[in-house]
Amino acid sequence: MTVSVRFAPSPTGFLHVGNARTALVNWLFARRHGGRFLLRLDDTDLERSEARFADGIFEDLAWLGLDHDRFERQSDRLAAYRAAFDRLHAAGRVYACYETPDELALKRKVQLARHQPPVYDRAGLRLSAAQHAAFAAEGRRPHWRFRLDDGSVGWDDIVHGPLAFDGAKLGDPVILRADGQPIYTFASVVDDLEMGISHVIRGDDHISNTPVHIQIYQALGGDPAGLAFAHLALLAGGQGEKLSKRQGSLSLRSLRDEGVEAMAVAALLARLGTADPVEPATDLARIVDGFDLARFGRSPPHFELPELWQVNAKVLHLLPFAAVSDRLAAVAPGADADFWEAIRPNLERLADAAGWWQVCRGPLAPVIDEPDFAAAVAALLPPEPWDGESWRAWTLAIQAATGRKGKALFQPLRRALTARDHGPEMRNLLPLIGRERVLRRLAGETA
Image 1 (spheres, rainbow, N blue to C red):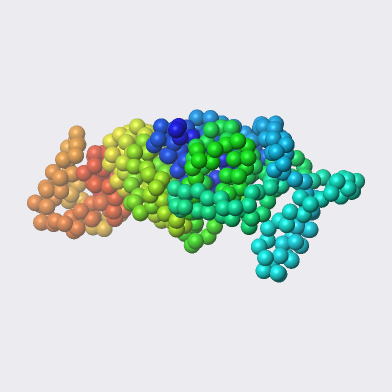
Image 2: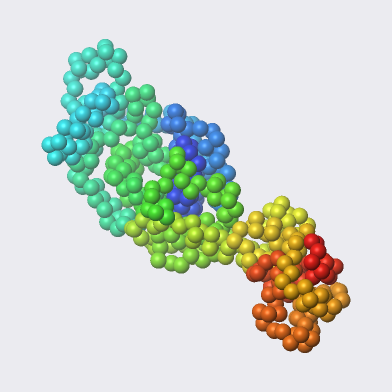
């Protein structure tokens, strides 16, 4: 069987890390098994769907490096949904209902008061022809429900193991609104069947939709045995809060704007929810090689920003100059591979390189703690050209002349040349700063 998966976001908001995790897991699963990754916009909610959100989805997935093998819009497939509905209608699996939202809410309230499950009572299924005509005369347009079969509906979930629901306790779902628009559940089943989806990998908030999915799939001629499900525990924020597209919770675009690396997001999300340690990676191929869907557990994992920044730093420390040169030029114009190799072990985000470029190219106001010491070490400064051994030669000469060593020797030099207490190895920074600039800073000049 060819593995075929889909990521089907609604363009009603920008993607957050929870959405990105679903997309990433689907993509990794497809690539791990040599399969297809389909991107499908579930945009039948015309009131809330916006072009800017659709554009944002494309941008976010491209930033993460998640390419797709096929693209579809549900708004382009309304004829397919109508044809599927007509087949279900001909088979007697759908029926018209006329209750208003307020009437349905009242029914649920009464059922709950009687300690009954709040499921639809199939009143629409018992309407006579005269009653249908009366509703039509009032100008009411029906919504349509799918009639579920009673009995157990089960599947072996890749994450949760064996699951089963009693069809009689689920309630017949609405599949077509009164305005003729298909409901998400119905449209998704039609798409999954016609597009050859083999594995439905999504959040576990959809577990209760799956029995409906299976029955509609079967009613349309599909074989449920050829469709696998994996329901991932939903990602929560650092305090356990629910993530929301409409609230902009941890959106990918906000993380991108803050300087987070795409590979840091991918590396963290690929392991959240598993017992495996997060391993920084510089490309998706490495993550694909170690990916196993069966490793995901059932407990909701928390997405912690401090952990993301830790992974972000580790990713930056691995990236070669060629992978960052274009972006590095924006914060450190003129920076070369030597500069990148020198400062990358001290970066949390790429924008931090700007501060180290200032150290290397100035102007920088030095911190001179001991003017006499600074003057003495200036006289011992070796001539250029400098390389990675020049720092050692200089500091050995200073030690021999002054008797200083350790912190008493190195700290005043670092503060004079970088105006900082910590940072990259001075053996790497010294050639980048240059002899003329070093002498001026030791003299207390801004250079």
